[in-house]
Length: 71
Image (cartoon, one colour):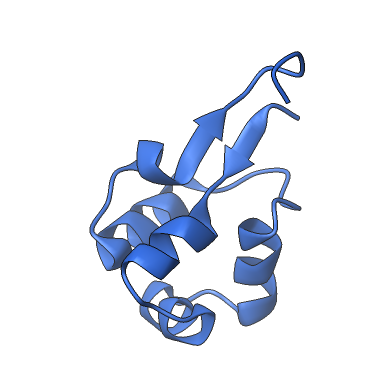
């Protein structure tokens, strides 16, 4: 898939652990880990909004598109 999740980059910039973010967003560690490791097939807008609010960022800071040709 051409969508790359840069959640780990934003978490590092904000010095926030997976456990802290999971608590703020009210999502399980397992589901957040799946998202962070690019294993997720989908994300709800409400979850994306909560992550952006917790990390004080924009959706484009977390999600990136790369075509299969450039990877």
